Image 1: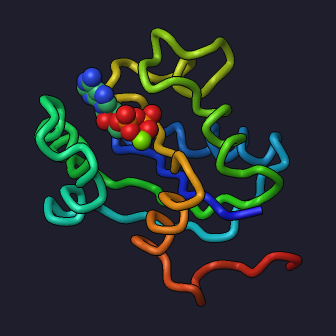
Image 2 (image 1 turned 45 degrees about the horizontal axis):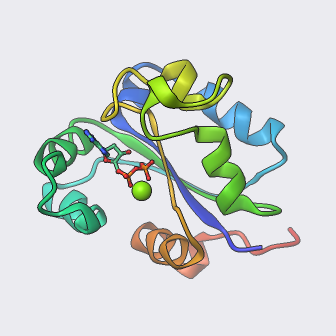
Length: 141
Ligand code: DAT
Ligand code: MG
């Protein structure tokens, strides 16, 4: 029952998709346990995506992720890591299943609207990248 990290990326905020994305989270019975609006610095974006350092898309990804405000969310609820990834859909919107967020709203592999942690270990690290413990609603409230 671990929490996961969700992000509405700059393209999603720019295109006013935040409400629609939160609505999908609520309809799926996932639970918002923390939320912030912020703009990543280059240093933060490089650190957040350090697992992709050296890949051909890395510099462009960092530039994109710093191009405007993002919304970061702590998402909880039953099986939240897997179920948030399922709601998002595959990385490439063109390959994502119908009715997923990326399929509906993504415009390219890079501009795919949302982020979600991919394992318990990354969820833990990514949530604490943005949130201290006292900024996360405990379970059962
Ligand atoms: P995901 O976001 O589905 O976990 P990932 O961790 O493999 O995907 O990559 C992180 C982000 O990097 C992804 O959301 C968009 C970008 N990206 C990945 N592969 C890419 C590619 N081939 N070309 C351009 N951007 C890419
Ligand atoms: Mg990933």
